[in-house]
Length: 207
Image (cartoon, rainbow, N blue to C red):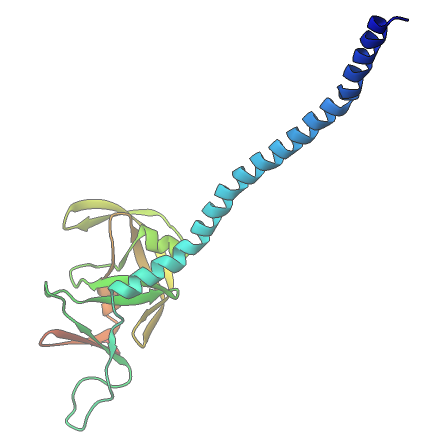
């Protein structure tokens, strides 16, 4: 064997030693694929988890926003000796800058903004708040509003709390166009109502 032949075989042995053994590229490809699948799954699950958190936190956020914008009605102190309207079963609602009596009530323990509407026959609840309170959706009914005739849906309220006053098993309507509960006469008929200046006092017991 000459020097040239020896150098040739030495070069071939060096190339073989540096070449990856059979099976290694396939193992790396499989491992890389597994890492890629796990990464893709993680990125798919992260948005789903975020959406679930938003869904379940929506009711709590809605309640906090309502409570911040609309204070609860003031509880009237017991009646004085001169016979002022009040007592332990009464609330006072202050008029806003437009002369409307607004505040926050609880329907099935969910806070909702409300406005007293003596021109409404039925108490009407915005669809988004009815959904948050878990109210049942009954048959469709036609209702007259200031904006014309609309389609409402019948429902039944297990508990309506206004200050320290509570009504149970109350008929109402669900309205998709409202932003606040309109407290109508089918609710107000259970209270004694007296207006004093910029305040409206609702006391337990029909007037």
